[in-house]
Length: 154
Image (tube, rainbow, N blue to C red; front, side):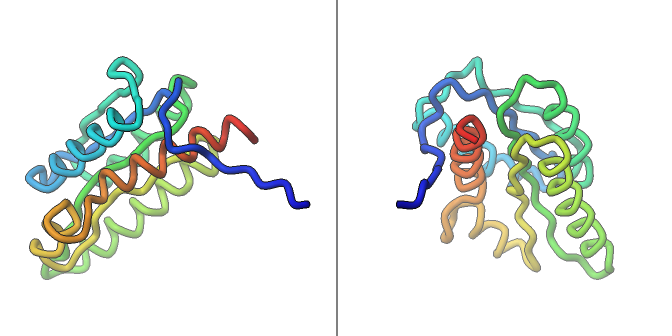
């Protein structure tokens, strides 16, 4: 028989942090509200969730790293929204943000969840922030809670 280990979707005694970008705040606030709501629905305590605001998505990884290294959080959720413009700036921001968030998790051992919407249009961003396709903030919180519980078991 194979031994299988999974993480539960209940907050229990988990302590999490959410880092949210202020850039495209009309979208990121929807992501944050959904993440906080998901946290509460799954039994998370108000005093066990820290929300940190940063200027843009590019600042998410360094802030997540600081939170992960503090030892105070079982997982960190990174929320942002990058919408493609007319230049290649979008590509650089998205690539470096994704790489940075991934590196925080692998280097610190603290799950760092990528909850950044990357879209070509504002309409796509609105849809991924709750209008049509669920909410990436809520999904990211689910992943964070599951991973926090999983890491405790491993």
